[in-house]
Image (tube, rainbow, N blue to C red; front, side, top):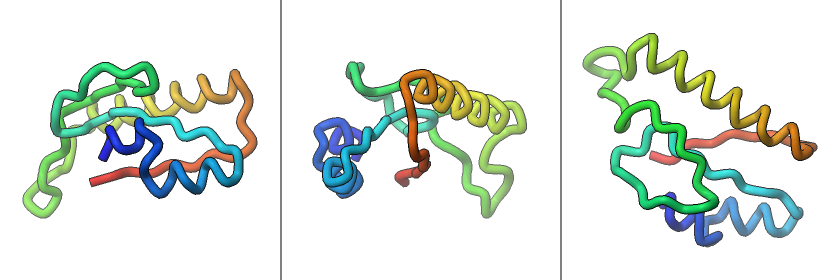
Length: 91
């Protein structure tokens, strides 16, 4: 699915094109190693999460690193101009 985002083929890409929005794709925890791509922001914290039905999905340190990575991404986008910001995940 990440590669579909990068190719511009996902529903969010279509919607973004209709309103003139940018889609920023970042890997904070995809469960596989992704090929390098100029439009992929590599901020991997871990290879996926654990099953939260059996214990914590991630450690406190991983959660903090994930939040910090999100803050960095937002700051980067703010520096080039942002009107609306939304986040999303794919599982």
